[in-house]
Length: 442
Length: 175
Image 1: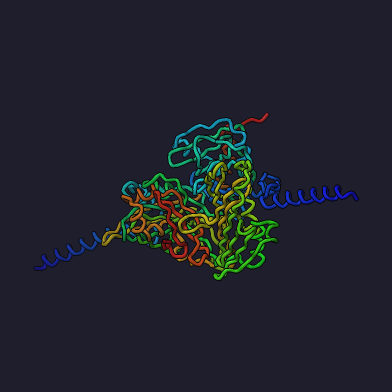
Image 2 (image 1 turned 90 degrees about the vertical axis):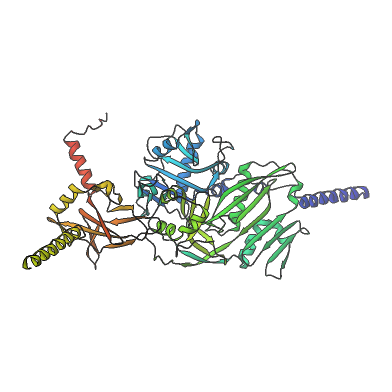
């Protein structure tokens, strides 16, 4: 064979190999899946990524039930109607608080988002084009009439309400049967004390929610699932060490990508190389990437919901930091500071940074319901002075007026177990009270 | 001297009978329909301590109703239910006592279900229930009352059908 030809072949092979190695080193070719395009596979995950804190069926005056949406099934039915109705929106009109209240006297479904949800997240989860519903950022409540009213109504804050006009009826299939699900009846505070307040926040007499003992997801199969979700096939080429505190630390490419999993189930990930290549990324793509990662890290039965998003600018690159909270049987889990425990930073079509706490419920603990009846009232009375100190009120009427939200919640104990609680927003302060004994969680 | 003694005895008897009259308003063993009607005539709703139900008579299709009102911290409230049997209202279940907390309010979901037998547990819904609320503040006792009428929603539908068939309620014509 010609000596020159052999030399040329060697040069071409060396060039191709070096190009391949450089592309792997700097991740020049990003697979479409990791770039976060919304595919049919992750569409369902995206739809589940935003959920209200509670769903209330109002069947007329003094007839309201809250749905226990353990698996998210009911919200999925409702979200399809939302997708069609918001998708065919013709205009957004401001309405008064009084009009909004009147609309809620008919039959309908009320979705409460607490903390209020960024409207882009709602759009993204419903696969609608990136766009704006109106001149506001967050939504705290959605009212979906179940009659001949084709509009959908939004409560943005205490004094701002909108009507989203659309030509389609918002009929949710099976609505008529939802109330037959043996859900607990709720009453608005004003229905209870008509002479003291006109507050329409719903409360129930009964407090029935178990607590859970949890354990960290640090079994070998959990660790491997988490590492593969974060590093993909690069995990096979990574170095793994055990830290002195029992943490598992995995490093790829001389520390350009690092994962740390602590014995408590805290997961930290940092990727330094992502900033090297710019890549266009829509809001929905970023949301899809974050959602997919969190659902891969968590176990299959668990639901993680995006609660917030912040824009992050790094040079020319625009990224999004998403915060997620877990739902146990439809109930939100958070720290006692009300913060969610998972944060994902997505830039240039990739996850740049990640932190989260991953634990699973192992033992259910029934709460002693010694004060079960009139739970909300008893909690307010037991913690009267504590509330008065932090959110001063003139009298009972003012206190009842200032209750913005009352919902079940799970709070991480210092040992990271799930404590069944009531989350109450009074004025501008969020309080947590244990269901077991009505004590405030500080 | 005898006359003075008689005056003292009569005075004592008068005081006793006035006190007895004062307590006669309280929770009784049972009430006749006439007594309840008399209370309905005399009750001054806006001077009572019950805020809900707002009116003396509440007609409901639900087997429970909400009772709420305002009082003062450390007041003691006793709620007693009486179901109608013939021309009388007789006690239904045990009385419930509530100690009023610092908010000075009370609320309770009251069931109209009347337990007939314990094992097997059988209940019926009381069609007419007289509610007596006794509020103790120190040595002072005040009362408030409500009458709850339960109407089966099937009966309401039946009545509406009767009205429709008698053409009193116009019905839509479908072509």
